[in-house]
Image 1 (cartoon, rainbow, N blue to C red):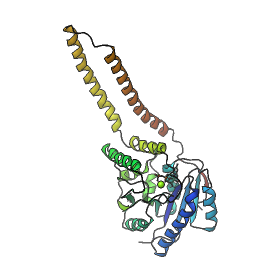
Image 2: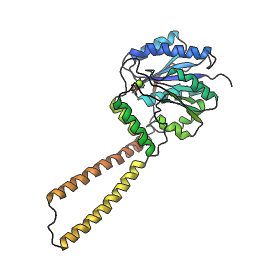
Image 3: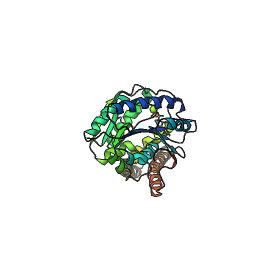
Image 4: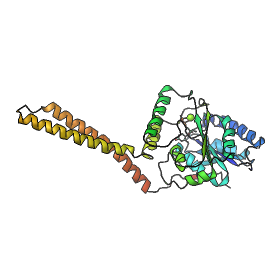
Length: 317
Ligand code: UDP
Ligand code: MG
């Protein structure tokens, strides 16, 4: 097997505090792998600037001038982590044998990259990086994440537990990804859907090397919600089921009221009436909200807007 040409894709959003460190660490990794003849000497590192407002793009551009293996893509605004990775993959997929995506804060273990490449050489189209211990994360972030992965699986979404976006993807898998036309992209749900030969590598996730996390709680919740609504119709099924139960329940209640009336009992008062109206009203609005979420997604999908816009492409040609 010939030596594969690998492109590393790192999304960056306001990462000026750590970029210098990241570039030098990635340079060591790249040069090490080239000297071990694990990857082709034309392999490169592509930073996707996801609409940073700090000097991230300036730093990437400067490095490009004297480091030929550093390349950059600048998105016109902040499209979010998933679309930044996606944009990088779509732009670079035809210039390499495989892509490795990882976060710019280098919380993922760079030592397992070489194992990923071995597994790719053995015929795997996708190699998932799976953190074993998330020591770097607080209990409040780790526990909900674990529950979330369990919930996704219960809803029938095929997902590699704990895997985020540190993965190797072959040119073929990236080509298939381009055929997925959805806008609400949840990459870790899409790759298992492809059914290609894949494997995992395990590692311990480290702490951020600097700067603050760029994923706000709100962005994280949006991503989590996309993961459910983009891959599972189970919530809609629960609504139907719940509606059925409520109908049966109300029939039983009706029987009780009729019997109570024929026996001359006093009709239950205000409180219970008002309470039930409010309760059912609340439940209905909540469920209508969920249906609305799906409709909103259909709406955004049918528009077929471009999923990302490249402002400057300093990676190709
Ligand atoms: N990121 C991005 N766009 C965003 C938010 C984050 O490109 O809107 C990048 C960020 O620069 C980093 C990666 O995505 O390289 C992961 O972000 P972060 O480390 O904040 O996430 P966490 O590790 O806390 O999940
Ligand atoms: Mg991080």
